Image 1 (cartoon, helix red, strand yellow):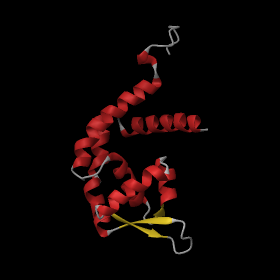
Image 2 (cartoon, one colour):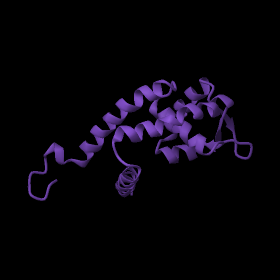
Image 3 (cartoon, rainbow, N blue to C red):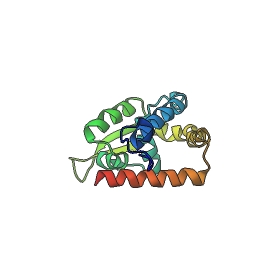
Length: 146
C-alpha cells in the first residue's frame, strides 16, 4: 500500500500480486528452456539440488525446495522413470530413501548450465540487483514461514 493512499484494496499495491504475476512471467521464460531439457520447473529444481549435492534423502531435498514428501516423491519417481536418478533405501536407516544421480542425470547438468544466464538476461537486472532482490524476497519468505 502506498503511503499517500488509504485504500488497502488496490491490486497494484499488493506485494503478493506482484510476486504472483512475476511468477507467471518467469514461467513463460522458463518453459521453452525446460522443454528442451524435458523437465518441469519442480523437476528442474530437484535436479539442481542434486547437482549441488548428490546422494541426499528425500527429506533433505524437500527442505531445500520447501516441498512436502507427498509432493516430492511422485516428482522424484518421474525423474527416476526418465533415467535421471535412482531412489535407494538408506542402508543405515531403512525408513530413509536416498536420491542419487545416474550418469544420464549428471550429464544433463551440462545442458542445463545455460538456463540461469538466460533467466538473468530475461530479467533485465544486473547480477548485483538480482542478488539484492533474491535476498529481500528470501527475508520476506522466511518472515512469513515463522
